[in-house]
Image 1 (cartoon, rainbow, N blue to C red):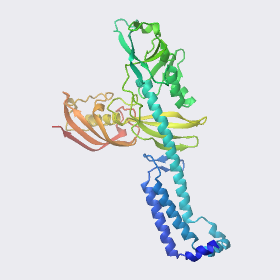
Image 2: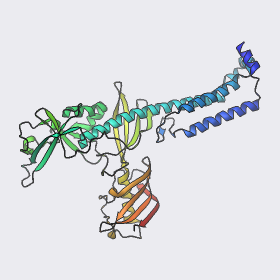
Image 3: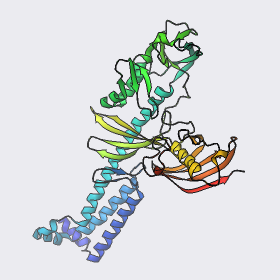
Length: 430
């Protein structure tokens, strides 16, 4: 009875009218998808795109409205269509509109998953950044009124001047020992990845932290908790007597102290862009972003930083970091590309008149490079001030740096095939 009533109120549409409505719906669907992120999936669930995707509420409403139009066109034939379908098995095939709907649902579902994974990556990588700052830069909350000082020397190196080391007492509620700090880092990593990063050297009482892109730092198993309570404040300490510990983190009469040598203003640590989910696998996913804090940058002026790819897996019901692949540092790579240009391609100026050396392992220009914009790890638009041999600002370089492969990945200017400069302009500064 309901179908008959609908059939009376909504007459059967002609084929032309149906085609027109379907075309309008298809056009609306395509327009909506063009306005969304360029995040996509191939058959192996590779994700393409660099922006965070948040599905707009308005988009959902308009999609429902379009679906309603298609549905109404489909049922307007009433009982006649139902009887026709029953008597014609061939009509059981999936309709074009149904196929479009299935594709849209599948794509939206994957985009929602990518968005969910991006949030997971955002949470874990920012926690990693915060702990790396504390671990590497000593960026802990401290009481600057509770201090210690020691004169540290090495009796095995006669004649070397003693170093005065100053300490602040750590006030972080969650970090009151070296083990607390290491356990916080460990909580973010899978067991396998942690074992790779912190491997005990045979015959040595050291753990090797190998996450830094340029150097390897050694920390003794007990280095975080080296107890100096038996030394008087402001006394001398021979490194040979404390097994050559770094003495960056110490325990003193029940308090946990950190050296002020690296201690910058306390901040939580952050990345220069939002995580970009690039691959979804059966047991996890991968996301890339740029780290703009040490040890992943060489200069405090870095604004973009070093491209990192994090691999995540779910271990015992919790998402963990399973690998970190270190890519190129944008400022450093751009600076080497500009240096290479003035050494090999620029005929208007002699590098003898510029503050640029021919040593490819010296990055003369990194402090002066500014990135205007960048396309993930592929290219960037830069400006750089070039000084004359007396140290005065002389030239302004502008151009696009295109990275064609992994050349310059580790900021070594020994592979010119990995870069290309376009739209180069060099002007003299007045």
